[in-house]
Structures are given as C-alpha cells and as structure tokens.
Image (cartoon, rainbow, N blue to C red; front, top):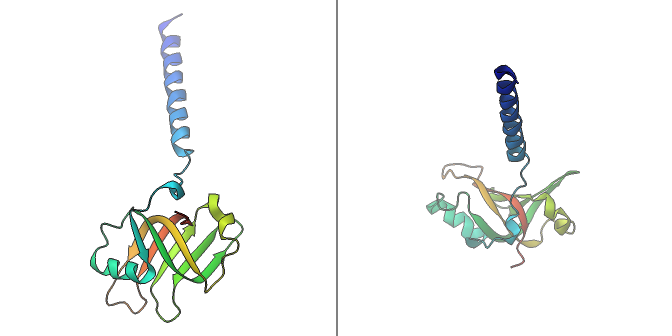
Length: 144
C-alpha cells in the first residue's frame, strides 16, 4: 500500500472517531435530579428571604421548596408550575422534568406542593415592581 492511501485511511479513522465522540457528547442523557438530596429546603417565603441575602450559594444547586401553585402551564410535551401567591409578584418557576410529568397530572392551581429542582436562574431586583423570580429546571415531586 502506498503512503497516500495509509494517510487517507488514518485520517478517515480519526474523523470517524471524532464524529462518534461528538455524537455521544451531544446525545448524552440529562441527569435525573429527583434522586439527589436537596442541598437546601425552603418554604416559598423562606426562599424569597434567602435570595434577598445570598443568591450565589443557590446557583446550580438542587433545592426543594414548598408553596402554593399560582399557575400551571401545560403543553403537549412539558408542564411548568409557578409557585407563589396572587397577592405578590414574586414567584418560583418550575420546569418539570419530562421523566416526571405524569407525577403532576393531578396538580391544581391553589393547592400546596413540594417540589425539588435545579436552580437555573435567579432574578433579584429590590427596586423592581415585578417581583423576584427563582427558576428551577428538571423539577420533580419532593417525596423524600
């Protein structure tokens, strides 16, 4: 075999291995946070007090919270819950993990619920008239 064919085969093998690595990385499953222990446990009011003092320790942490369901947004492939009270603008928004959507089928607005999820964003502005928001992703019921 001449050298050009050997080099072409080696390059083809390297490209194939690189493509396989990229495909595995892109298609890796997401973590199921429902089995992880929450770093912090809060009621709705306690969580709002916590973000006024310290948001850095909450970022990217798994937390559990308890509160009233203010609003439920359902689509064919996802459910988002908004915890809070009608009397205040602040809220906790929970994007339900697709593996646990069936656990929330009976959830009703106004009822109390215990959830657990990963803190993805915190919007805190003491001057805001729109309130503060904590966004949780990969949410599930907190059964533990």
